[in-house]
Length: 496
Image 1 (cartoon, one colour):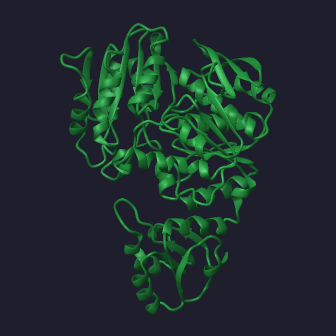
Image 2 (cartoon, rainbow, N blue to C red):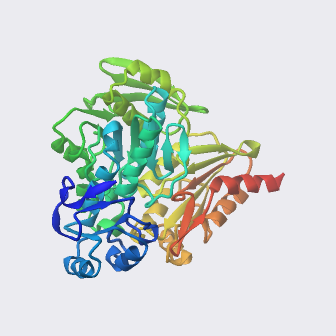
Image 3 (tube, one colour):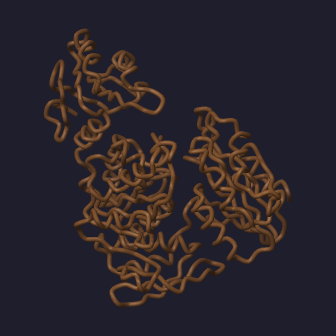
């Protein structure tokens, strides 16, 4: 594509050296992905700075370099007169708007639903994805569990655990349009918002699930976390807001001056969507949905009161996307399970293994409450410390689990560069002494899963909380493949 670098819409250009126009083959932010004709963006990360890799990008054949270090780019421009060097205020914002142009505004051909919240982002975004496809709106998905088009999961190297970097988002949007999809459901994390990964995207629907303290290793202050999440609602056309959440709903309502739907579990809340009479059954949940003065009985093959809330949020997104309530009601009974979100795997002798991504104290408390409602003999819960997150949160995970299971296995997700034993020690600090239940420890997630399974007996529930990012554990900078399902299957095969 031919790009005129001094004419990119919404791009704040400080200086442009060399040819103003170049034929561009690709947009990249990793020097290792540069090919002949690429434009390389010098994006700063937690551990490095793209400006360090300009030389490598040029050697690999980049036609243009975009960065924020004026003296450095000016120096390179003097040596490489045939290349374009664009100096911008913010390389991430430049990447976003250049990607919009390069992928020919593919986003404009999609209904875009963005979901933010501390807990429930993946589940809610997946419910939107499933619901839209079931009611005849071909939809893709971008989130923690991977990248999907309306036909299913596609092979895609993700740049981040949750919300991809802007150029990857627009590449996915372009791919979705190419196969005929009409919508995209995506998780939008606070970090993604702060790092301008969704800059320039106007969401047709923004969904708020809840907020509690999280990602303090990045944000440092809760106020920054909140402000980052609120950004989503300043770039949306409509919104779905959980007014039961005291942490953020009022702030969102102060921001939105457009059409929105509120949802709540309380009949006196005045919300547009209210659910009541929530009951757990062996094959899912039953509840009543109140909307526009009518009450609709619903049965769905999902588990957990909090997942009913997530489903109601997805219903709100469908309504704001012009689906009828009748279309929605005909589809919800066919909603599939969400990978790693109260995912129930039947085991021998009436065991139930439940995989749930709960990785915050609030989420862990909620999933334990719901698990205990299911018939069982003993409850064995694996809880996780996370080496790449704020260690101050780790004792709170123990407090959330304390006294709620017959046995707790403490293990580690994504130790990163931390020693697993150090992470486990931080979790253990949250338990009372003496322990209110038996506690075992395991230095890896694999060993933790096996320990929980070995302790189980007939009619037991084994809750495996926490989980992988993109099917892997992050250990010393490497993504090590991991699958709870494969470990479970292998374990019980050996027992036969």
